Structures are given as structure tokens and as C-alpha cells.
Image (spheres, rainbow over the protein chains, first blue to last red):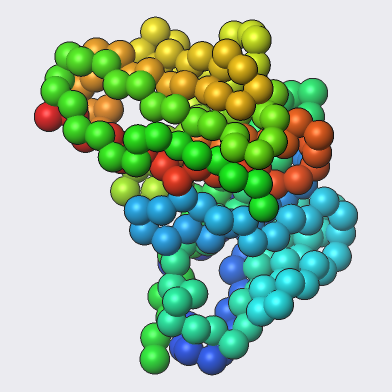
Length: 112
Length: 117
């Protein structure tokens, strides 16, 4: 089966750092994605990890440990506009369609 | 990144009618497109995988005859909600993967807000 877990909601302060965790158990693995989604809008791509380690992209970083089935998204220097839902998604292997399976999303609220 | 265009962005229809939603990849070819449904404050639920030139692969619990998918070309997939009912009201989102790059992110359309009255 497939199971992806993330916290339902988190709150953080403007200017701070927040880490959103994601754990997964899937039958096949071909990469883990993080997306940001504002209410009523489509998800926008943030990061992609397929090998273990940290990927950094500006204020956002994402980490992956395949042996532990674990990833996190790190947001630094939080801004009010970072208030959104953050979705962790695992891609299946390509010959199974390579489809993305999403976690339930983490609603992040950034307070002044 | 690549652009995926979804149309319409909003639609209101009467119960019993059918609604067609289009998903186009504008600057790349997509052999595979995905259709998702999202309820308020919930995550994306994969409905089906749309394969160009062949039948779609539906996820468990999704009615094939209710949600008709056609992927007639490398740049267009359509989802038709047949005999719509109020419980079909939802946010529908498509995504497409660049044919030439299998290990890149899937690009999402802007979504379609369907309201059935």
C-alpha cells in the first residue's frame, strides 16, 4: 500500500525557520516532491529529491532519507506570503505510470 | 517551467448535464497526464492517469463511466464529468509530464472549480 504522512497544520512567526516533515511508505519510489498551494489555486513546484541528502533553493531546502522513508521541507526567513498548504508527494516508478501520490498537506500559518 | 493550461477555470452546471474540462500542455509534449480531485482543505486525490492513444488508468473507487477521459493528442487530455450531481462539485486539477524528461516535476494546470446546482 501507499501511505504518506505530514502534520495537518503548523504555525510559525515571520522571520523564523520552520521544518515540515513527511514520512512515506510506498510500493515503489522514484522521487519525492514538495509543492506549495494557496487556497483556490493549483500547486506550484518547490523541490525534488531522488537521492539522499539536502537540496537547497533559496529560502527553501528539502531533505531526503530513502532508508528511513523520511523527508522534510525547511523554510527560512519566513514571510507572511509563505502562509499556504505544503504538499509532500511521492512518485512511483516509471513503469507503473510514475504517478504522484500526495500526502494530506500541511497548512502553515505565518504570524507577524 | 513548462506551461499547462486548464480550461475552464470555473463552471457552474445543472444536475444531470455533462461538463468537459480540457488540459493542454502548451510548450511540450505529454504522453502522460494526470487528473486529480481536491475537496476543501484536503489534499489532491489522483483520479486517473491519462495515456496518449490508449485507455486511461483509473484509481480504485473512481467510476470510469462517470469520469470519461480522452487523451487524443500529445498536448491535450479532456475529462468529462457525465450526468453531474451536486456531490461532484469539487476542484479538478490536471498535471502533465514532459515526454522528454521523465524525472522532472509534473506541471499543474490552474484547476477547474466545478459547481453542480
